[in-house]
Amino acid sequence: MTPLATIVRGFGIEPDAIRLLRRRYNTHWAVRAGERRYVLRRFGTWKGAEDDPAWEVAWVRRLAEAGFPAPAPVAEPRMVDGAMHMLMPRLPGRPLGAAHVDDARYRQLGRHLADVHAAIEGLPLPVQRPRWSQAVDGALPIDGGRARRAELLAALTAVDPALGEQLTVATAALDARDLPGVFAGAPRIVAHCDFSPWNVRLSGGRLVGLIDFELAHVDVRAADLAAARRGYHDAVVDGYLERASLPDAHVAALDGLWLGGILAGLWRVLESRLAEGSDLAYGMGWDVEQLAKTRPYRG
Image 1 (tube, rainbow, N blue to C red):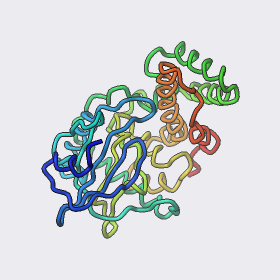
Image 2: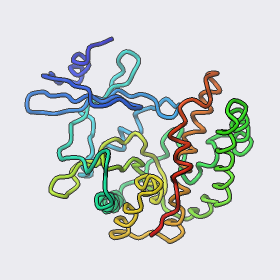
Image 3: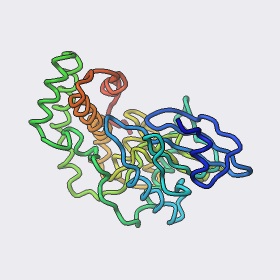
Image 4: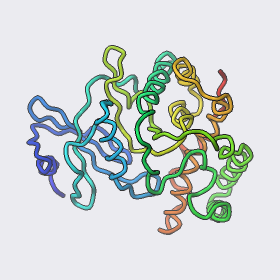
Protein backbone atom coordinates (compact mmCIF):
# COMPACT_ATOMS: atom_id res chain seq x y z
CA MET A 1 0.00 0.00 0.00
CA THR A 2 1.21 3.47 -0.83
CA PRO A 3 2.08 5.49 2.32
CA LEU A 4 -0.38 8.26 3.11
CA ALA A 5 2.38 10.86 3.06
CA THR A 6 3.25 9.84 -0.50
CA ILE A 7 -0.40 10.19 -1.53
CA VAL A 8 -0.55 13.68 -0.02
CA ARG A 9 2.65 14.68 -1.81
CA GLY A 10 0.95 13.70 -5.05
CA PHE A 11 -1.31 16.73 -4.51
CA GLY A 12 1.70 19.05 -4.14
CA ILE A 13 1.54 19.23 -0.34
CA GLU A 14 4.38 18.18 1.99
CA PRO A 15 2.71 16.82 5.16
CA ASP A 16 4.08 17.27 8.68
CA ALA A 17 1.49 15.02 10.34
CA ILE A 18 -1.40 12.77 9.31
CA ARG A 19 -3.98 11.25 11.65
CA LEU A 20 -7.12 9.21 11.10
CA LEU A 21 -10.38 11.12 11.56
CA ARG A 22 -13.00 8.46 10.80
CA ARG A 23 -13.91 5.47 8.70
CA ARG A 24 -17.39 5.18 7.26
CA TYR A 25 -18.27 4.65 3.62
CA ASN A 26 -15.30 6.92 2.98
CA THR A 27 -12.16 7.24 5.10
CA HIS A 28 -10.81 10.65 6.17
CA TRP A 29 -7.47 11.75 7.60
CA ALA A 30 -6.47 15.11 9.04
CA VAL A 31 -3.33 16.48 7.39
CA ARG A 32 -1.10 19.21 8.80
CA ALA A 33 1.40 20.99 6.57
CA GLY A 34 2.99 23.88 8.42
CA GLU A 35 0.22 26.30 9.30
CA ARG A 36 -2.14 24.79 6.75
CA ARG A 37 -4.74 22.11 7.51
CA TYR A 38 -6.26 19.66 5.05
CA VAL A 39 -8.42 16.55 4.95
CA LEU A 40 -7.47 13.55 2.84
CA ARG A 41 -10.40 11.43 1.72
CA ARG A 42 -10.34 7.94 0.30
CA PHE A 43 -13.56 7.19 -1.52
CA GLY A 44 -15.32 3.99 -0.59
CA THR A 45 -18.75 2.71 -1.51
CA TRP A 46 -22.19 3.75 -0.35
CA LYS A 47 -25.15 1.40 -0.19
CA GLY A 48 -23.71 -1.17 -2.54
CA ALA A 49 -22.81 1.23 -5.35
CA GLU A 50 -19.40 2.37 -6.55
CA ASP A 51 -19.30 6.14 -6.43
CA ASP A 52 -17.79 8.25 -9.17
CA PRO A 53 -16.51 11.40 -7.42
CA ALA A 54 -16.87 13.61 -10.50
CA TRP A 55 -20.46 14.70 -9.78
CA GLU A 56 -19.79 15.49 -6.12
CA VAL A 57 -16.53 17.31 -6.85
CA ALA A 58 -18.17 19.42 -9.54
CA TRP A 59 -20.99 20.45 -7.19
CA VAL A 60 -18.70 21.29 -4.26
CA ARG A 61 -16.50 23.37 -6.57
CA ARG A 62 -19.54 25.23 -7.85
CA LEU A 63 -20.53 26.02 -4.27
CA ALA A 64 -17.06 27.24 -3.37
CA GLU A 65 -16.84 29.40 -6.50
CA ALA A 66 -20.15 31.00 -5.49
CA GLY A 67 -18.66 31.93 -2.11
CA PHE A 68 -20.28 29.14 -0.10
CA PRO A 69 -18.06 27.58 2.63
CA ALA A 70 -17.63 24.16 1.02
CA PRO A 71 -14.36 22.15 0.88
CA ALA A 72 -13.43 22.32 -2.80
CA PRO A 73 -10.50 19.95 -3.51
CA VAL A 74 -7.05 21.46 -3.95
CA ALA A 75 -6.52 19.39 -7.12
CA GLU A 76 -8.21 16.70 -9.16
CA PRO A 77 -8.86 13.42 -7.26
CA ARG A 78 -6.23 10.74 -7.90
CA MET A 79 -6.50 6.98 -8.17
CA VAL A 80 -4.02 5.24 -5.84
CA ASP A 81 -3.96 1.52 -5.05
CA GLY A 82 -7.31 1.04 -6.76
CA ALA A 83 -9.13 3.72 -4.72
CA MET A 84 -9.87 7.36 -5.47
CA HIS A 85 -8.27 9.92 -3.15
CA MET A 86 -8.99 13.62 -2.75
CA LEU A 87 -7.32 16.37 -0.71
CA MET A 88 -9.46 19.25 0.59
CA PRO A 89 -8.85 22.23 2.88
CA ARG A 90 -9.97 21.67 6.44
CA LEU A 91 -12.73 24.17 7.09
CA PRO A 92 -12.71 26.42 10.18
CA GLY A 93 -15.19 26.45 13.03
CA ARG A 94 -16.55 23.83 15.39
CA PRO A 95 -19.30 21.25 14.83
CA LEU A 96 -22.75 22.22 16.03
CA GLY A 97 -22.83 18.95 17.96
CA ALA A 98 -21.90 15.28 18.00
CA ALA A 99 -23.39 12.36 19.93
CA HIS A 100 -25.88 14.19 22.17
CA VAL A 101 -27.63 17.16 20.62
CA ASP A 102 -30.51 18.92 22.36
CA ASP A 103 -33.59 20.43 20.76
CA ALA A 104 -32.16 23.96 20.89
CA ARG A 105 -29.27 22.92 18.68
CA TYR A 106 -31.52 20.96 16.35
CA ARG A 107 -33.67 24.07 15.98
CA GLN A 108 -30.50 26.02 15.17
CA LEU A 109 -29.61 23.35 12.61
CA GLY A 110 -32.98 23.86 10.92
CA ARG A 111 -32.40 27.61 10.67
CA HIS A 112 -29.00 27.05 9.08
CA LEU A 113 -30.49 24.60 6.58
CA ALA A 114 -33.06 27.19 5.53
CA ASP A 115 -30.24 29.70 5.03
CA VAL A 116 -28.30 27.18 2.92
CA HIS A 117 -31.33 26.56 0.71
CA ALA A 118 -31.72 30.32 0.21
CA ALA A 119 -28.01 30.62 -0.66
CA ILE A 120 -28.04 27.92 -3.34
CA GLU A 121 -31.42 28.80 -4.82
CA GLY A 122 -29.95 30.71 -7.76
CA LEU A 123 -27.28 28.16 -8.72
CA PRO A 124 -27.82 26.13 -11.91
CA LEU A 125 -29.23 22.69 -11.18
CA PRO A 126 -26.99 19.84 -12.36
CA VAL A 127 -28.24 16.56 -13.76
CA GLN A 128 -29.00 13.85 -11.24
CA ARG A 129 -26.07 12.11 -9.62
CA PRO A 130 -25.38 8.87 -11.52
CA ARG A 131 -27.24 5.85 -10.12
CA TRP A 132 -29.10 7.90 -7.50
CA SER A 133 -32.81 8.47 -7.18
CA GLN A 134 -34.90 10.99 -5.28
CA ALA A 135 -36.39 10.19 -1.89
CA VAL A 136 -39.70 11.06 -3.55
CA ASP A 137 -39.27 7.95 -5.71
CA GLY A 138 -37.69 5.75 -3.03
CA ALA A 139 -40.53 3.24 -2.86
CA LEU A 140 -39.21 1.72 -6.10
CA PRO A 141 -35.75 0.70 -7.32
CA ILE A 142 -34.16 2.85 -10.04
CA ASP A 143 -34.72 0.20 -12.71
CA GLY A 144 -37.49 -2.31 -13.16
CA GLY A 145 -40.29 -0.62 -11.21
CA ARG A 146 -42.77 -2.69 -9.23
CA ALA A 147 -41.82 -5.96 -10.90
CA ARG A 148 -38.18 -5.63 -9.91
CA ARG A 149 -39.13 -4.52 -6.40
CA ALA A 150 -41.26 -7.63 -6.00
CA GLU A 151 -38.29 -9.77 -7.08
CA LEU A 152 -35.98 -8.09 -4.58
CA LEU A 153 -38.46 -8.41 -1.72
CA ALA A 154 -39.13 -12.06 -2.57
CA ALA A 155 -35.41 -12.82 -2.56
CA LEU A 156 -34.98 -11.11 0.80
CA THR A 157 -38.02 -12.83 2.29
CA ALA A 158 -36.62 -16.21 1.26
CA VAL A 159 -33.57 -15.69 3.51
CA ASP A 160 -35.16 -13.55 6.26
CA PRO A 161 -38.99 -13.77 6.34
CA ALA A 162 -39.41 -11.23 9.15
CA LEU A 163 -37.23 -8.61 7.48
CA GLY A 164 -38.85 -9.23 4.11
CA GLU A 165 -42.29 -8.75 5.64
CA GLN A 166 -41.25 -5.51 7.36
CA LEU A 167 -39.97 -4.02 4.15
CA THR A 168 -42.98 -5.23 2.19
CA VAL A 169 -45.32 -3.51 4.64
CA ALA A 170 -43.19 -0.33 4.61
CA THR A 171 -43.17 -0.09 0.82
CA ALA A 172 -46.91 -0.68 0.60
CA ALA A 173 -47.50 2.12 3.11
CA LEU A 174 -45.22 4.43 1.17
CA ASP A 175 -46.95 3.57 -2.10
CA ALA A 176 -50.26 4.57 -0.57
CA ARG A 177 -48.94 8.05 0.23
CA ASP A 178 -48.12 8.75 -3.45
CA LEU A 179 -45.10 10.96 -2.80
CA PRO A 180 -44.43 11.39 -6.55
CA GLY A 181 -47.90 12.93 -6.83
CA VAL A 182 -47.48 15.12 -3.74
CA PHE A 183 -44.22 16.56 -5.09
CA ALA A 184 -45.06 16.53 -8.79
CA GLY A 185 -44.81 20.29 -9.17
CA ALA A 186 -42.18 20.98 -6.52
CA PRO A 187 -38.88 22.57 -7.60
CA ARG A 188 -35.73 20.50 -7.22
CA ILE A 189 -32.44 21.49 -5.59
CA VAL A 190 -29.19 19.75 -4.79
CA ALA A 191 -30.03 18.32 -1.37
CA HIS A 192 -27.07 17.72 0.94
CA CYS A 193 -29.01 14.89 2.66
CA ASP A 194 -26.65 14.65 5.64
CA PHE A 195 -27.15 18.12 7.06
CA SER A 196 -26.37 16.95 10.58
CA PRO A 197 -24.89 18.69 13.64
CA TRP A 198 -21.55 16.96 13.07
CA ASN A 199 -21.31 18.14 9.45
CA VAL A 200 -21.99 21.82 10.15
CA ARG A 201 -19.12 24.12 11.19
CA LEU A 202 -19.94 27.28 13.15
CA SER A 203 -18.04 30.27 14.46
CA GLY A 204 -19.81 32.85 16.58
CA GLY A 205 -23.13 31.25 15.67
CA ARG A 206 -22.43 31.74 11.96
CA LEU A 207 -22.14 28.91 9.44
CA VAL A 208 -18.51 28.85 8.26
CA GLY A 209 -18.35 25.35 6.82
CA LEU A 210 -20.42 22.46 5.51
CA ILE A 211 -18.74 19.09 4.91
CA ASP A 212 -19.52 15.54 3.75
CA PHE A 213 -21.39 15.80 0.46
CA GLU A 214 -21.25 12.02 -0.07
CA LEU A 215 -25.05 11.72 -0.04
CA ALA A 216 -25.82 14.89 -2.04
CA HIS A 217 -28.10 14.51 -5.04
CA VAL A 218 -30.96 16.24 -6.82
CA ASP A 219 -34.17 16.11 -4.80
CA VAL A 220 -36.91 18.29 -3.33
CA ARG A 221 -36.20 20.76 -0.52
CA ALA A 222 -38.35 18.76 1.87
CA ALA A 223 -36.14 15.69 1.34
CA ASP A 224 -33.14 17.65 2.65
CA LEU A 225 -35.17 18.74 5.67
CA ALA A 226 -36.39 15.17 6.21
CA ALA A 227 -32.81 13.91 6.22
CA ALA A 228 -31.80 16.56 8.76
CA ARG A 229 -34.80 15.60 10.91
CA ARG A 230 -33.71 11.92 10.79
CA GLY A 231 -37.19 10.60 11.34
CA TYR A 232 -38.16 12.33 14.56
CA HIS A 233 -36.11 15.47 15.48
CA ASP A 234 -39.01 17.89 15.12
CA ALA A 235 -36.97 20.85 16.39
CA VAL A 236 -35.11 20.87 13.05
CA VAL A 237 -38.40 21.50 11.27
CA ASP A 238 -39.39 24.17 13.78
CA GLY A 239 -36.14 26.03 13.12
CA TYR A 240 -36.40 25.67 9.37
CA LEU A 241 -39.93 27.07 9.32
CA GLU A 242 -38.74 30.13 11.26
CA ARG A 243 -36.70 31.13 8.19
CA ALA A 244 -38.46 29.49 5.23
CA SER A 245 -41.85 28.17 4.22
CA LEU A 246 -42.96 24.79 2.88
CA PRO A 247 -46.43 23.69 1.76
CA ASP A 248 -48.33 21.86 4.49
CA ALA A 249 -48.45 18.74 2.32
CA HIS A 250 -44.65 18.72 2.07
CA VAL A 251 -44.23 19.07 5.82
CA ALA A 252 -46.72 16.25 6.37
CA ALA A 253 -44.64 14.04 4.06
CA LEU A 254 -41.31 14.43 5.92
CA ASP A 255 -41.47 11.00 7.54
CA GLY A 256 -42.28 9.41 4.19
CA LEU A 257 -39.34 11.15 2.52
CA TRP A 258 -36.96 9.90 5.21
CA LEU A 259 -38.15 6.34 4.67
CA GLY A 260 -38.06 6.84 0.91
CA GLY A 261 -34.41 7.77 1.14
CA ILE A 262 -33.66 4.70 3.24
CA LEU A 263 -35.51 2.39 0.86
CA ALA A 264 -33.74 3.90 -2.15
CA GLY A 265 -30.46 2.83 -0.60
CA LEU A 266 -31.75 -0.63 0.33
CA TRP A 267 -32.78 -1.39 -3.24
CA ARG A 268 -29.22 -0.68 -4.31
CA VAL A 269 -27.86 -2.94 -1.59
CA LEU A 270 -30.15 -5.80 -2.57
CA GLU A 271 -29.32 -5.37 -6.26
CA SER A 272 -25.58 -5.54 -5.67
CA ARG A 273 -25.79 -8.43 -3.20
CA LEU A 274 -27.92 -10.48 -5.53
CA ALA A 275 -25.38 -9.91 -8.28
CA GLU A 276 -22.53 -10.93 -5.95
CA GLY A 277 -24.37 -13.85 -4.34
CA SER A 278 -23.73 -12.39 -0.85
CA ASP A 279 -25.94 -12.32 2.25
CA LEU A 280 -29.01 -10.19 1.45
CA ALA A 281 -29.96 -9.50 5.07
CA TYR A 282 -26.53 -8.63 6.46
CA GLY A 283 -26.10 -5.36 8.36
CA MET A 284 -29.61 -3.95 7.97
CA GLY A 285 -30.23 -3.33 11.66
CA TRP A 286 -30.00 0.47 11.41
CA ASP A 287 -32.39 0.58 8.46
CA VAL A 288 -34.94 -1.59 10.26
CA GLU A 289 -34.64 0.62 13.34
CA GLN A 290 -35.70 3.60 11.24
CA LEU A 291 -38.92 1.83 10.28
CA ALA A 292 -39.81 1.58 13.97
CA LYS A 293 -38.85 5.04 15.22
CA THR A 294 -39.80 7.27 12.27
CA ARG A 295 -43.01 9.22 12.86
CA PRO A 296 -44.89 12.18 11.37
CA TYR A 297 -43.90 15.72 12.31
CA ARG A 298 -45.78 16.92 15.40
CA GLY A 299 -45.46 20.64 14.97
